[in-house]
Image (cartoon, rainbow, N blue to C red; front, side):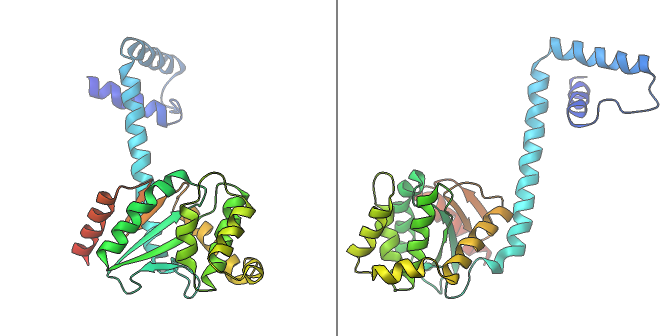
Length: 243
């Protein structure tokens, strides 16, 4: 009986209310009253129904992400533009979407680099997903421009260790301290090359329903949030077993 009531409650939550021409007005009122009385006496049924609905929505989201990931697999890297760390010929690809103003990204950074550096066979793809304000985009553009001077990972590492809120002064001082040509950097930040990577990353995130940072993709697995090294190592191991 409980299962029947739960199913009916879920149906009423997810479908147009009793839109059946075969039921008379009186019958519809009787069903409404039955459901109302049942929910008042057993409010936990409503919570169970909502939980089932949430689980189905999450499952549908995961399925859509998987389909999108399969379709976009070859779009993640723009040759000569998208930054790649670790081993460019690695047998497992790990992609990270991040923002230089993201505290979680900065806290995860040492663990991420530990995994990449210790493994020696991970292709680490870095996606500049600047979503936390104007300074995030300035920093992302500066990082991509630094790559055009051969110092992307140096700049990336430095930005991940900057404390406090970002400012143009901090960003450009970081570049200057690394010996980058500041005038060239500022010009390259506005280039079509940098524009293409910034735009592409946002489009990929949108299609994959990635809305926050950090987010990792390892093989066919999307992992939102700051992952501990152990979780990344396990995901890499699982992907190797599939290869």
